[in-house]
Length: 318
Image: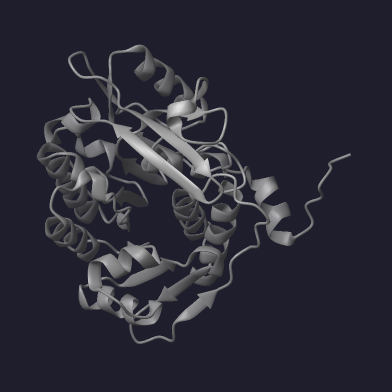
């Protein structure tokens, strides 16, 4: 297995028109979750990925499992809960450049993941374990599940890649959020923060200064997302490298771009690329994801990614 990831995915309802959600009358049903987005992105690029989670024994859970399995992701360690529902969330495209998200995930099946439901063989032997700061925010049992996954990964030589993915709506206490996110970063080999997330954790500063704060916390490799400006690679005792982003004429849906970036970086590392080339692939994946409505719908297959990165994609394929 190339990459194993653990976390909640929810049924996503997207209104078919822009404006305040209160005026929406029709919706499209999709699925979204940081970890499954990464798993799907990797699978579309030809890598072997596994997503571990817990779903309700309901129609949403059935549909989600079929969708993610259909994307070629291994779901053999997904468990079901007959007493708790699959989580739901809504997107709101209020106006241009103003997208909002509303979660209905309290007491969801995924929030009741427990360490005893995570067998060692689910992670042992994988090249990378991908985790996010969302999972430990869901519940103490999710936190213990993630802690066990980290122990298994370290014992088996699996590298840990951590995306903070800070969701303040899930943390009742911001100081606790900082503490836990920093702790998980310190246990990881590679951290993929956004610039605003780094500022939340460490205060104001340049991207370079904030990357150094992660190193002080014990992180070896930082690849920081800078939005349309690209990304910054930082490794102790080496010059920092800025990797340019890709131009996007119109952002349709920014949600999921960070997950696409993570999938691109992991794909590059799996292919043996340098950190710079892996970050460039991540930048391209993130850009492509913003051009399509939906969390995972804009994730490309390898041939489309290559066309985009070469700049040779045409407006019309004839």
